[in-house]
Each structure stands twice: as structure tokens, then as C-alpha cells.
Image 1 (cartoon, rainbow, N blue to C red):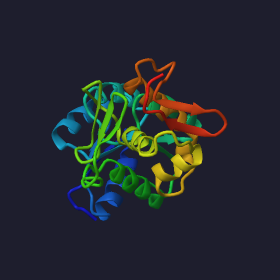
Image 2 (image 1 turned 30 degrees about the vertical axis):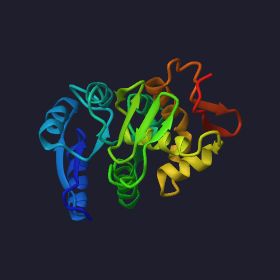
Image 3 (image 1 turned 135 degrees about the horizontal axis):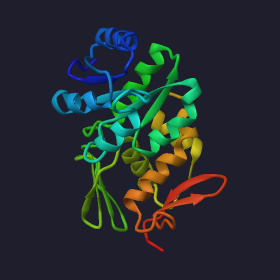
Length: 232
């Protein structure tokens, strides 16, 4: 375990903060906590976390408001922690830039696996020996973990970056929804397949000239998605 990895736990319940803090510290992470979104914004600036575990329903500033503010200039992975009765609300969180979610009550081992997965997806050193991927006006550089569209930098979340990388690595080839979910999650969880549409929509908004009529990330109805390097 890389002891330098930092996790920010944002939850208004003291027992949840304590439980997660003790467990994650025992796993070798450095942990900071915050009781609401406003406190989390301050903590994120000074603690510089590698992953954020974010509750949604909190006083003063909830998880949605935090994501809106935080995602303006930060791409650190965010995992939503939500109660089962609020599961449908996670779609909004994903649309605002969250990478994954877990539902209370959850197993600590599952949460730890999710954290490891988003850390791997956000690791810029994983493709340092590979050439940049180019398709139309999109350039994805795995070595620097950057994406430019029409020569302008684009800020993608780790999930969006890896989704684009997977599609661009096999231009013209259809990847099924299950294939994409399996390769993105790396742990066999089915949650990502259920939210794949949201991640694709977010990605199109950032890289397509017209997200409603995509020319790069094409939907193959009933199957999955493919990357078309040449704009229609």
C-alpha cells in the first residue's frame, strides 16, 4: 500500500467519519474528514486528497453543491456514499462528475476495492511508455494523463479519461457495455454498467462539438459504443 495516498471522508455523521477513518488508516491511507461540503472544499485545497468519499445529504452544503464547485477545476476521483433509499439520486451525482458510488450499508472490503480501482484509473504513470492516442481533433496522452480537443485542454474525471482511452485504443471497433464496465471497474462490480450512460453523456459534453449529435463517440444501439476518428 502506498502510504502517501490521501483520502478525504465527507459525512455529517460522526460515527461514519470515525468508522471510515479508522478502517482506511489501518489500510495505510492518510485520512482527513469534513462534516459538510463547505468544510470539504477547504480541506480539499489544503489536504490535496487522492480520493474523496462523499455523502450526499449534509447540512450547509450538500454533496451535489460540493461537486458543482469542486469539479470546476479538479479531477480527483470522487466516490459517492449514499443510503439505499437515495440510490436513484446518485445519477445526479454522476452527472456532476462523481466517478463511482457505494450504497449503505456496504462491506469495507468492497469500499476498499472501489478506492483501489479509482486510484488505478487516475494514475498518470500507468501508460507512460505508450504513444499518445489521436482521433480527429482529440488527442489523449497517457504519459501526462491529459486530453486536448481542438488543441484546448479538457478536464476529465479519471473514469471519463479511461472510458475515452478504451474507445480510442480500438477506433471503429464496438465495445459492449459489459466490456466497458468490466475494464473500467476492474473488480467485477455491476454498478458501473448501470451508470455507463451517464459517464458517456458527460464525456460527450466535454469532447464533442455537438453532444446531442456525436461525431466521435457513437452509440451502437443494443450493443455498446465505438470511437469514430473522423467526424461526420
